[in-house]
Each structure stands twice: as structure tokens, then as C-alpha cells.
Image 1 (cartoon, rainbow, N blue to C red):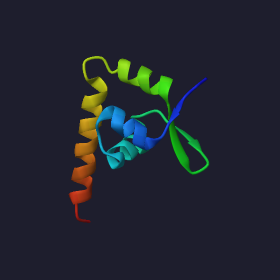
Image 2: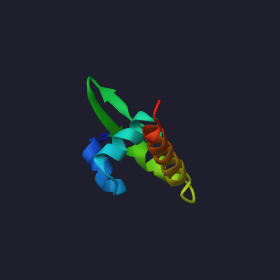
Image 3: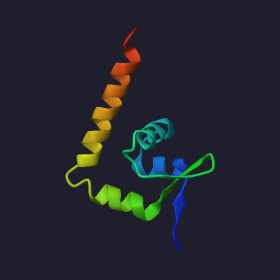
Length: 77
């Protein structure tokens, strides 16, 4: 049986906030599926994604993504 994780569970596994988890999902860094309006992450896909990150590759991408997001939110247009 395949396990679908809620955003809160993914947040706990990755030790990051739910808002950060949602942002990473929205940006496509964390693989996810939508069931109606709900967001779920396949446990197998999350494990594969974490394992394929190698030496922190996905962490580095996520950090730069978060930094870019913070920079964009500070820009005044």
C-alpha cells in the first residue's frame, strides 16, 4: 500500500516549517500530488527525492530558493 503524507508530516520529517514546506512544494522542489484542494506527498517519492539529493544537493537548491523568495518579497515595485 502506498502512503500519502500530509504537509504537516513532511514538515516534521524534514524539520522545517509548514509554510516552508508549502513553498518548496509550490516551487516544485518537493514532489507532490493534489487531491482536490489537498496537497499530499507520496512517501516513496519523498524518500527517493531525499536520497537523490546526494551531498545536500536538494538542500542547497531549497536554501537558494528560499533566499530568492525573501529577496523578491523585499523588492518594492
